[in-house]
Image 1 (cartoon, rainbow, N blue to C red):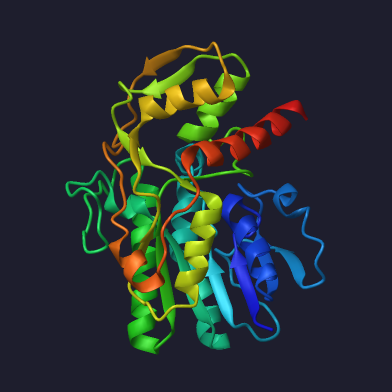
Image 2: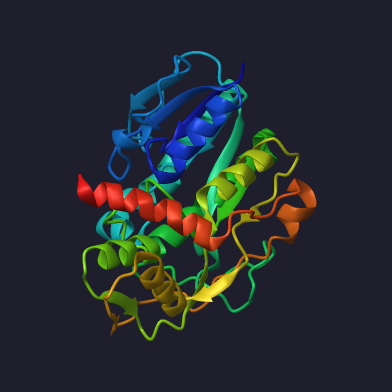
Length: 311
């Protein structure tokens, strides 16, 4: 039975990953300091093979016993969070990744880094392939997240080349689904909350910027395939079906039967104008592609948000 550590395991993605790994026969240690994660996300896990450890991975990680895999998902991921927690975001990207890699070296474990499409910044190449180096403002407000992840990728590859650690890097594109926080601040949770509470839907700029939305179960499947693959280079995982933010707002008004209006608010600094993954590498090496359609994914997410707003 593989023993696996998931940092950030009580977060949106981490909690889904913990469940998936348990289904695949892993013993799972979930580590989280609960700054943006929540024990509610893992409250449904009753397995004896599951253990929760409250710890900030930016400090030294001490974990007894053998480990086969370390999946480093700890980090604020929403602009609302990393703009409020800029130093913590930089520290978990740098110190947290360093600590997790040191543990992987000590335990001879496979190390898996959750990186992000934000390493591409406001891209000048579209769609974004893994070979693209990005267009990032290192001193802008979003730079704390973008550069934390870019550093995390750099130190991960340094440990791979210098110490021979088996490392994996996933670049995650916009993902949605149940367990996103109601106050997450990203487009889909924002629009769902506003539509369900009768508020106007706030679109940044004119809503012409594009995003590509991947349902969480598709993402987790891609992550597991990468974890068990031979790939050490970064791999994009996301849904290449691109749409404007205004189109997503209209879609959510339709899904919720809301009478809310769409209003435009100023565009945040350094907000990317386009975002779509080139998933050629994932198709070729992982035999992976998204399967859940937007309408299906939005319905299950809507159901979750309705339940959250009623409690």
